[in-house]
Length: 433
Image (cartoon, rainbow, N blue to C red; front, side, top):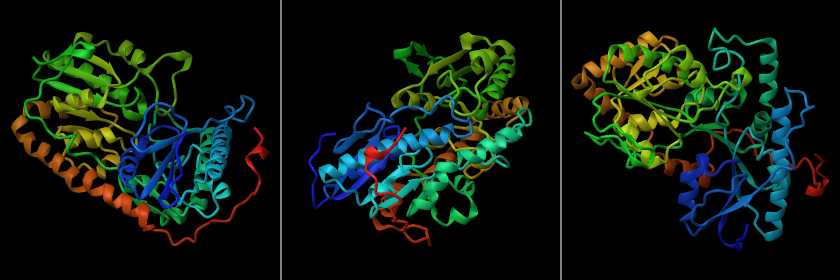
C-alpha cells in the first residue's frame, strides 16, 4: 500500500474480498478522474487498475472448527471486518480519510466502517438476502430444506442486516434481488445493474470457434450448444443440462457442446465423499465426449468467441442471483434458452428475446434447443431483440453514469438518516480473535 494522499481530491474506498469484482468499471472510470483518489481494499493480491491503489487486508484466522455451524459465516465476516478496521487505521495514519466507502455486503468488510470512519458515507452493494422459502433454498423438491436449514439461513443474514442498518445507501443489480431483502429496508436500496459492455459483447455473424490455446477447433461445426457458469452445480442447472445433452446427442449426430466453467461447486451444497457433479452426471448419462468440450475458465477474449459462435446458449438457474453471462450472451445476439425462473423473466420474455423452459425438464429444454436449431430464420428476430434488450436496459454506457451519479451525488432511495454514530472508540489493537 504505497501512495501519496492528495488533500484536495475526493476520496473513495472500495471494499471487496475479490478484485475488482463488481467494482471493475466504477474503479476504472474513477481512477481516470484526477478529482478523485481511489483506494481498493481487498484480500486478493493479483490484478491492478491504473491509478487505483490496492490495500491488502488479511483476516487473522478463519472461523474456528468448534464454532457452531450456524455462526461460522458470521465469525468469518467479523474477522474480515476486523482486518478492514485495522486497514482503516493504517489509512488514517497516512492521512487518507475516505469521503465514501463502497463495499460488498455479506462477507464482512463493511461491518465496522462506521467505527473507524464515523463521518464517512457508507454505501453497500447488496447482492443477495437469504430466505428459507420462496426463492433458491426450497426451489428443488428433490432437495427439501430442513429445520436446521431454516435456522442456519436466518443466522446467515446477520452481517447483511448490520450493513442494512449501518449504511447510508444500498444498491442491488436487479429488482428480483432487491425484493429478497426485508420490506422495511427496501426503500434504502436503489436498483442499478453493473452494466454490460455492449461494444465488447457484440454479435459477430458467421463466427467460427477456434481456440488454439486449448486446442479447440470447431470451425467445421454448424450446431454448437453452449453453457457457461462459474461451477458445475444444481444451482445453475448443470445436472439438467447434462441430461439435456444426452437427449440431443441421440437426436443430432452433428451437435457439438461447449461447457465453460470449473469442475467445482460455486453455489449450494457439495456432494459427499468429494465427488463432483460432473463425475456424477457423466456416470448417469454417458455422453459422446468427443462432441462435448469442457474448457475450464476462459479469459474474456476466448469466452467472447464461444458465445459469438454459439448456435444456442442454455442458461439455467434457481431463483437466485442473475448471472452476468446470461446478459452477455443476449448482448452478442445469442439465441438463449433459459429457465422460466424469476430472475430470468425480469429480462427474457418467451418467444420475444429468448425461449423459456421448465428448469426441471431436460425433455422440454432439448425440444426448445431443437426448435431453435431447426428454425434459424425464425429465430433471427429473437436474436436481434435479445441484443436490443441489453442495449436498451443493461448497457454499461448508460448505467455507468447513473452508478457514478448515485455514488457522487448521494442520490439514494433512502429516507433513513445517516447512521454515523460510532459504537466503539477502541483502537485496532483491542480486537480479539
